[in-house]
Length: 95
Figure 1 (cartoon, rainbow, N blue to C red):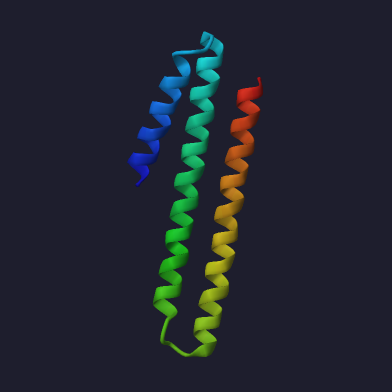
Figure 2: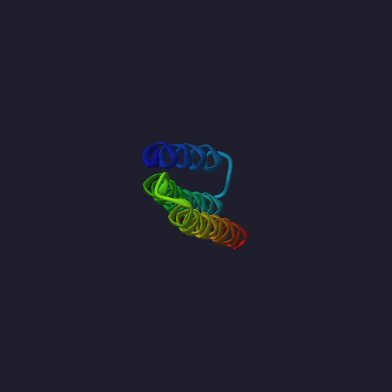
C-alpha cells in the first residue's frame, strides 16, 4: 500500500512537472511527497485502530468499549495527520 501511494505520488509529480516551470516542478514534487507521507502515517494509525478493535472483540462489553474508544481516538489522530499533511502540501505549492 505504501509503495503504491508513493508510486502514484511520483507519477503525479512527474506528470505535473512536464507542464510547469522548474520551480513549480520542485514545489509540486515536494507537496506530493508530503501528502503521500501523511497518507502513509494515517493508514498506519488506522491499521493500528483496526487491530485494537480486533483484539478487544469478544472480551466483554467494558473491554470492547474501551477498545472502541481507543480506536476512535486513533482514527481521529489519523484524520488530523492527513489534514495537516494536506495543509502543508498546499503551503508548499503556494510558495
